[in-house]
Image 1: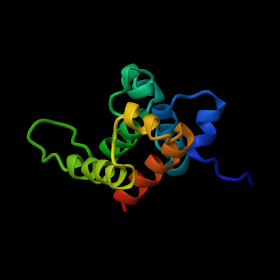
Image 2: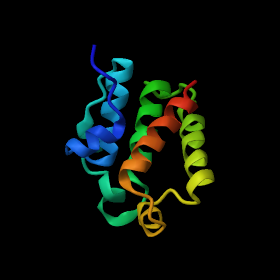
Image 3: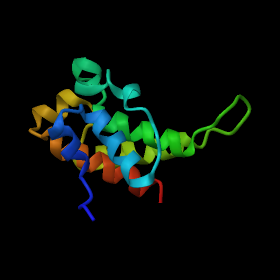
Image 4: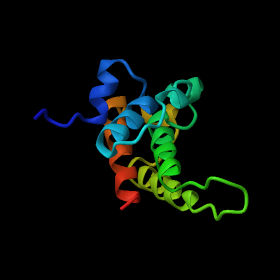
Length: 122
């Protein structure tokens, strides 16, 4: 039996930060979220805005708790809010530019964001 990969392992293999979080989620929970939905999100949507890893975690929360049609209650927002608050509480920011300015490495935030979404979904 092989050892479970960390989200950052996928990052080191060449996926971007958002794709890495999604791939780790897919592997651990047997889901099939296409990583392509996150291909443009790395580097804070390529301009330093919302951290791609955080964005990927929010995609996972939305996949797990999102609605399928108009009229259904949108409970996913409460889960993405938990992810955002956990990152903000720990790092003081959720945007890529600020995180990098504060020397938060991509590997670190990828693993943190993945842990935050798992915690939020408990």
